[in-house]
Length: 171
Image (tube, rainbow, N blue to C red; front, top):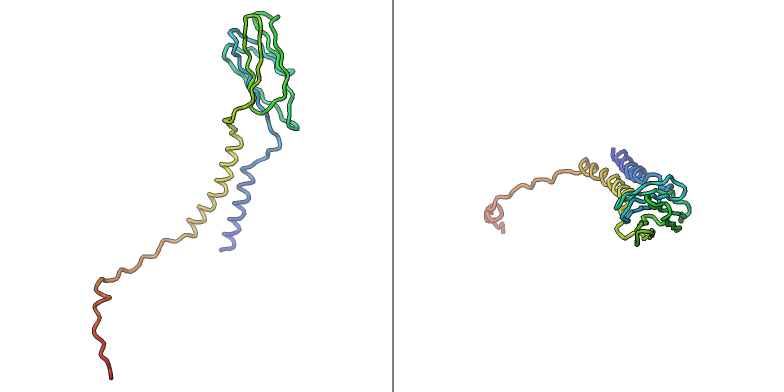
């Protein structure tokens, strides 16, 4: 019975963490594009279909990260005037934010800022939580199965220690 329990413990600890980690071969880099201009802007990233962003609107683009760096080209065109255009080429880091602004009514500018420290990566956090749960839940179950309640001690009477009859010396 103990060998079966130990085998179950070993397999659950090993399999739980492997299943929780999943296959992380394919990674993605994300680019957020934010329109800070006063007018609507048509945004085209690489060879994608242009998307119209209203003022203060944003859109996130996923890119398959291959070999570390991904080259991205952003083209922004003012919707009311097709002659006002801005283009920016850069290497993408995961979590970059491209901001489209309009310094003057006849120009557009694209600035790219790297990710801040507080970038939330839900995939990695959930994998760690699932791996922890996969390792700790079997231990909790095993402790419930194999643990026993503490023994109750017999209470001594307070007078039992000192209520002794004198021993007669046989000399």
